[in-house]
Image 1 (cartoon, rainbow, N blue to C red):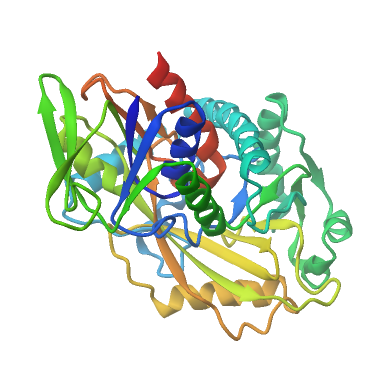
Image 2: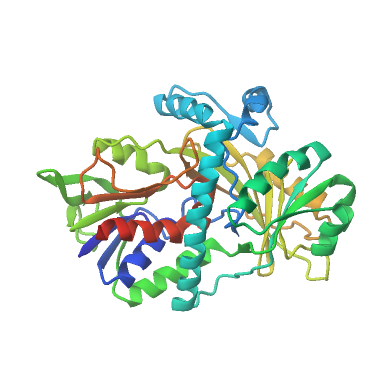
Length: 411
């Protein structure tokens, strides 16, 4: 079967890898280079066992800060955008304990499948991607916040996650680079099995391997619409139908997979399907680290108070954070980058000289509940499958959702 994958971020590329392994002919279309969107500078953590959704009951107490504080790591800027308002109302409706528990269970199941899929990809193509499996610490600044994390820990542990609460001294024993931050920690949740990797490098390695296996890539190519035949899609209309830069044309296929991230909503609407996918804007910096022992972390660290994550990728440290519902604004305010630099100086003062920050922003495609949209939708043509809406867990969930798309295609 010829399958056309729309999107060359980590989700689209993982889908292409899975489909090619199963013997399909695959074409991948994207307007940019692989990983150039939300994948390129993401938090780099592969968070298979700690998947707390953003839609959580605690959001209600935070609403005034979300709406009005200029320094909040979570920010909502209301706009004249019906999708934003509808998404926002559905998000608030999901901020309850039962929905959060259900979402956690479903995300953990998908993450377990994704870990297996990522490991299969590693065994298959041996990517050079600064992979590490050093675990993760989620830091809490107060006894109250640490106690609040206990319920999520117990929930995830009951679902098979290996996690435990640790004291500040235990945090430092696990990650010595936290020594100077001891007074700011009440404790942490420690998950020893968590991993990290450079997602952009994974995307590049997948491109290399898939091209060598005959997968066709049409990069620098816009998806402009669809040609129908009855209730099915006959072709995708692009700015380069033959892949040679010769002008407009159609790309025919037996089936299609939409993995276009935050652009999925608009194209889904063209098919008659409502995709509740809205961009959740995040930022990152990537800095060279001091190689001295104990200067920079080797364990993944999340500072829950700052909503900032730290991931070691080779000789670099990726520092990422913030979540803004501000539309498709791709600007990078200096204040947001300074926030990440300040967090690095506070938590890991000896990690880096911060000479080159390599600032980045990306539009994470989020659904209100935090669950990705995978497979067919009743409102869309039957030969269009979806793989979008992964939010901040795109890298974590990519290979599991790719497996589910392949299973849906075979059904």
